[in-house]
Length: 433
Image 1: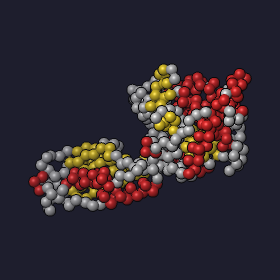
Image 2 (image 1 turned 180 degrees about the vertical axis):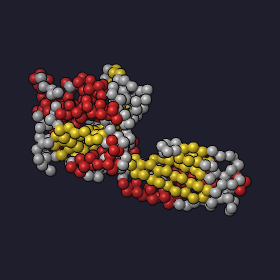
Image 3 (image 1 turned 120 degrees about the vertical axis):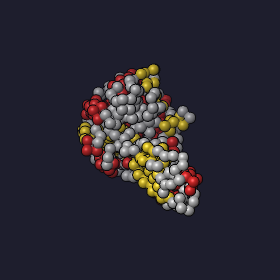
Image 4 (image 1 turned 60 degrees about the horizontal axis):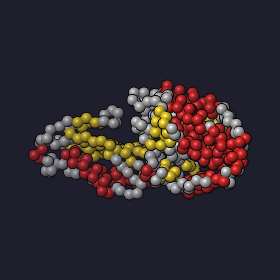
C-alpha cells in the first residue's frame, strides 16, 4: 500500500522547527510514517496472531505469505529460499535494485519466534500505545519497522534509487543445520552490501534510546570428566584418585577464577555426575545415578560462551582447554567448544554509522543515542555479516519481556524507528561507493 501525504500534513511538517534541518522528502517521510501508524499496528497484529515458532514450518511460511505482497507492492523482487534440507522452513528475501554505484543496504530481521504451537502465550492485546503478544518485539515489530520505513521512502520518492536487500530468516531463534548452509544466503548478501541494519529490538539506557554497534557471540561448550570407580573409602588415595565429580568441580571453579575479563561470560547451564552420568540426545538434559559410598565414574556439564570479538573467543577457548588438561589424579576430562553465532565486534565503521544516525536525531530534535554496552545484548543474525560490512543493530522497536510470556511492545517506538531508518537509508542511497 502506498500512502499519499495530505497537503496539510506536509505543510505542518515543513513548518515544524524540529524539522528545520530536514529536506522536503525527509519531512514527507516523517509525516508519512506518522500517518501510517494504525496500518502498521494492524499488520503487526495480523502477523503476531500467526504462530511462527522456529519449528512450526507452516506458521513461518504463513507469515512470509502475508509479508511477501507488502514488499512486492513497493517494487521489490521477492524470493522464498527453502530450508527444508536444514530442518527449517526457509527465508524470505526481498530485493530492490536502484542506481548503480550507490550504497547497497542490507536490512535484517526474522520471521520466527521462540514460541512454538504448544506455548500458552498467544494472542495480541492492545492497551493504548502498548501491545502484548508472542514476538511483538522479537521480531515481528522489527519487520513492521522495516516496512513502515520503506513505505515512507516510496511516498517521499527516495526508494526508487535505493539498492536494498531485505533478509528475513525463518530460523533466527534456532538456526538450522549445518549452520553454514542455513546462513549461506545471508552471508552472501552481507558480502554484497555496504551497510547492514539489524531490526531486532531497540535498546535503551535509563529510558533513552541507545545505538547498538556491537553484539557478543553465542557459543556452547560440553565438558565431560571420567574416573575409575570404587568404594568411597578410597577417594583421594593414590590408587583410587579423586573421582569424576571433583574433577568437574575443579574445572568449573578454575573457569570462575581464571577466565573473567570484560565482555566475556561463560555460564554453566546444567550438570550431572554419578555412576554413570550421561548427556541426553537433545543436548539439553542429562541422567545420572549413584550411591554415596561409590566414587563417581562420570560427570558432564554444558554451558555457553559469549565474547565480543573472534580473538576473544579463540583465546578464551584455548584457556579453557588448558584448564581442562590439568587433571586431578585418577581422572581425565575433555571439552568440546562450538562457536555458533559470531560476535558483531565494535568497529570504527559501525561507530561512524551511529554518528550518521545521531545527525538525523539532531535534525529531528531528538536526543543523541549513546552506544549500548555489548555485554547486555545477545547474539543475532547481523553478526554473521559483521566481518564483511559496517552495521547497526537494535533498529527495531522498544519493548520488554522478549522470549517470555508477556512480551510487550511500545507501539509508538515503531514510528520513531521507522523515521530514523527511512531518513538514514534515503541519505545513504544518494551516496556513491
